[in-house]
Each structure stands twice: as C-alpha cells, then as structure tokens.
Length: 166
Image (tube, rainbow, N blue to C red; front, side, top):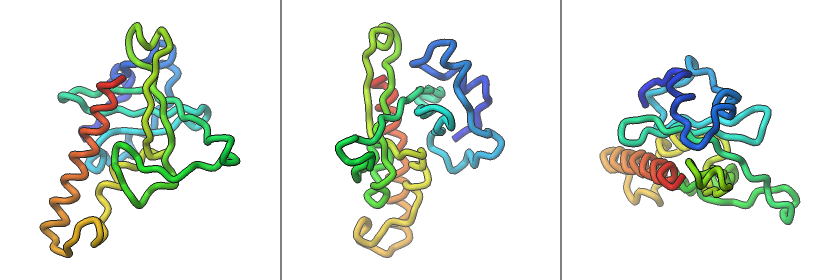
C-alpha cells in the first residue's frame, strides 16, 4: 500500500461527518510497514470504533466502523468466525462484527451495513502466512507463492466490495 498522510486519511472517510473525522484517532503512521499492508485498519483505544482505509480504483476510501459487543448470550465471549475480508480459516477467535453507517442520505437516516473483520485488522498479515498443506495440497514453493498472491487479491476485493456496499 502506498503511504498515506494524515490529511489524506481524514479526507478519505466516506461515511463520517466533519466532527467524526476531526475526532478520529489515527495510528502512528511513521511506524507502519506500508509495503505489507493491503488496507489500513486500526482501532480507537478509547471508543468501540474501528477505522479502515481501502484503496478503491486508485483512491483511498475510509470507513468509520462501530464494533458490535460480544453477544450477552455467550457470557461476553465471541463465537468462532471467519473474517469476510481475509477468509483465514486458522484465525477464527479474534473476529468481530463491525457495522458501518452508509454514506450519504441513507447513513443520515440510520442505514448501516455490517461484516465480520479481524478484530485487530490483521488481515494483511493473515493472507501472507505460509499456507498449511491442507489448504494448498502441495509443498511446492511456486504453488505457495501463487496461493498467497491469490489470498492478497481476495482480501483487496473483499475490502473494496464492503466499501462499495457502504
């Protein structure tokens, strides 16, 4: 991912008011390994919010996401789930339902859309992990590289599709 500035990130939000954009907490941009990111995602340390900036058609599109609390019926525990963005079958314990207000008039009227995403936005790391033999069906390094590239593309497509839904 191409490094983004604070101004670019704040200008990218498509489902936020000016006040929400101004109040958004940002990660330490200098500490990020931009080359290993397929999208920029982070959580607000003080509020149940997450943020994601996805490149769509060459332009950054940012979302403010509200994290749904764990279901009370489970005693506050989360169920195992698969992230809809990275689809990692091994990381199923730390996935949360994130809900985004739709952009424009629909969002102002309270319409939202939700999806399951890795709670800590580690999808870029998950898609780059070495696949298991069961996932790949081979120990061939070339097959492994193609498999990882396919997962990276799938992550980008899934994240962009969610942005489009917002």
